[in-house]
Image 1 (cartoon, rainbow, N blue to C red):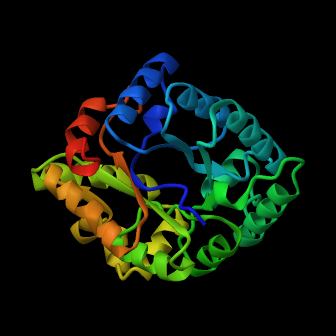
Image 2 (cartoon, one colour):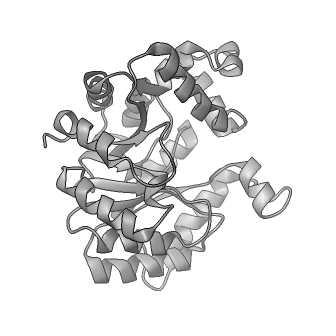
Length: 291
C-alpha cells in the first residue's frame, strides 16, 4: 500500500484557532516551504470546517486531524465529511483518530462516560466501514501508544500517529505495525538554545499532560521513572521535546526517521495559539524540507 504521508509536516493548534483568513495565508506559505502536511487537533466543535479552510488554502499538502476525537463525532458524520471534502479538494484529507482521555471526556460528556477505550475505538472503526460512503483504511490512522492500540492500528488502519513520544517509541511502533504501515510521529520543538529557558517552556507544556494516564503510562513503558514523571525531570523533558537550534531540531527529526518514521510533524511549543509562527517554520524549513 502506498504510504499516505512522507516528508515533514506541521502540527499546530494555531491552524485551528484564530482568524480563518490569517490561517489561510499561513497555510499557503507553509506549503510553499515544503511542509507536506498540516495537522490540527480536535477537542470538539467544527473540526471539519477547519479542515475545509486548510484544504481551500492549499493545493498539494495533506490536511490531517491529530486527532479526531471519536467521542465527539459520529462515524457517519466523519465518513460523510471526508467524502465531501475529498470530492471538492482531492485526496488530501487524512483522518487521524483518537480515543482521547477520561479527564476530558468525563468532564465534557458525563462522569464515567469514558470506558473501554480499545472497544470504543474498534466500534468506531467498524462504523466507519459500515457508513454509506465508508472511510477507507488507507485514509485513516490511530493515535496509538500502547501495544493493544498499536495492534488495532496495524490491522484496521493505514498506521499510527504517535504523539508526545521519543524516537525509541517510534522504533517500537514500527516493529508493532510492520514495514508497510504508516508511522507519522508528532515531535514537539522549542527553538531556544538556553537550556534553562528551553526546558522551562517545554515543562510548562508537558504539565498539560501530567494528569493524563494515556501519556504518563506510555512514558513509563519507555523507561522513565515515577520520579521523572512526578517532577517532569530534565531527562523526561529532553526525551520528549527537542530544543536548541535548527541543527538540534533536525537531528531529533532524523532520529525518528532512523527509528522507522515515514513522516514527522513538528509542533512549535511556547508560541501563541494564534497566529501561526510562520517565521519559525521558515527558519526550520531548509533543514527539514530542503526549501
